[in-house]
Length: 249
Image (cartoon, rainbow, N blue to C red; front, side, top):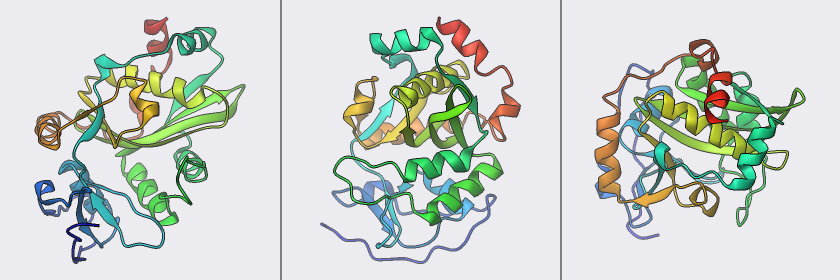
């Protein structure tokens, strides 16, 4: 690893407190900005608002990343494969927001990933994001088939940016359908950007693409000026998902 970062002290911060990370422009070639610290609410919210996110394994210190390029999805650029459109038209799935956050993030942590040993969603991360969910910043979308959880995804929302973290699927097309419904919902609420962090073939098929770190930070700064939809989204948006589905098909 080139330019290894020295582990630094991070205070435990409440959601009202902020921390100034080193500039993302000082990141290593791999994209590491800092290492060490904790996953307190203020620390996580500070990181996301500065274009940084945590990503590490159980046997390493917390690593804080800001990769270049950055992988993003602009909602108007969403591409829906024809086969998935057919699935959505059949209404085989139902969708809900913020009803089973811990179940969703736990399922994501247990889903095997290609070329990945173990999981980066540690118990520490589950607890930290569950707290962000309780505070109204982290959100989940649940996908059901016949009242049984079939898939889902979760992330963090600040301003008009949704920072996507992970997804899982226990049935074919479940998480894909959930992604499409969520993106259309976010677009309708004025979201400018979905941060997907690093490139994956899976999300590239839906229209996500790489942009430079500098462009990402510029877009992020602008989008964070928009109000944050803080709170339980199933309460804030009782019209979901019927309104979204009816507008799509």
